[in-house]
Length: 460
Ligand code: MN
Ligand code: MN
Image 1 (cartoon, helix red, strand yellow):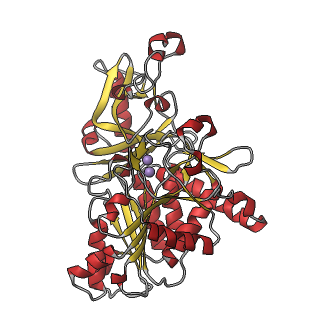
Image 2: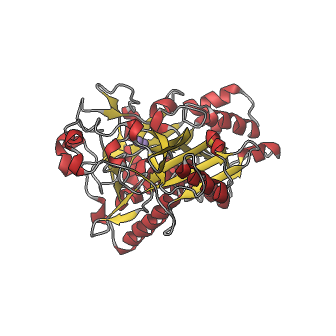
């Protein structure tokens, strides 16, 4: 039952492909540190491959037929792409979905204050983080500020070599006796994850001169007033670039593998389909998974369903029933990272059912916590079909479960899509240090995931 390590099967030419894919992915991570940046990357790649905005197809009253490519851009934070297949829509789509939001530290709406010759920003973290991992490290600021006239100012500070970085302070070890005695989860508080932004008073300013210095920079370099922060979304993320990990360069360490490795693999898989598929292929890159898939850009919003309804009409089918049948008869890989086995924390896993780095794409029959609660539990019939597709396409794959029973757990977007009555299984890439500022995946697993997602879209 043990799954073989994928690295063992690669010959010279395939090793080269694994490496070139990894390089492309590292660049994707470096340019996509927020959901907005990932959505922009995806939209550009789709446009280049001949996908057109669904809104444009609707305006042009375009008749959609097999081979046509359309996509939607939901508020610049989620993308859903469709490659129309030969079979009737009602026979269902082959859907691959991943999320493009990652844990981070967000600035509050009224962020700035001055305290003892520092200007700082108040924050509220996003997603599940171990707070102690986010202090005393280089952070970059990414995001947008929207002015009252609707103009959008894009902010990206800390990515260029000569950019400044920002960060959250930690207490020196010499004075940490009290802090060190606290529980891990309580040693750093959420309200104390404030970001230091400036430390020099503005000349001639009496009242809060360091904050004045900060505001002057925002005004001079970005044309922003303090009040513009009220309608801003600014995320503090690790400033480091993704790097090869391990002396053998077999892995990648970087920010946001969860779940941008699956998002990237999905996009590569979809764009790699050059033939007209039997069934319509759908690639989803969604937002807000880390906070429960809520909001208008999360999976719980109905933009995918709405898009299917629009597509049905453009294909000459106006019945509501077409949409319901299409979704009910669809098949889906809900792609998200899986907890990779870490020998340093072996006791957190049950080894026969753990995901191992390098052993290929993972399939999780269920996720959830304490008796599978909150999980989508994939049907055995569907898993049988997946096994056949994977084996017939020489894909390295493994089955996995998120850690030892009753130790914790997690969820994905799977259960939301399953509400339509479609077949869904959790699939993805094993990651170490999940939700840490720097996560680790294996290059082999990324390569196998692209092959797996493509094989699924063509054969499921
Ligand atoms: Mn995830
Ligand atoms: Mn996550």
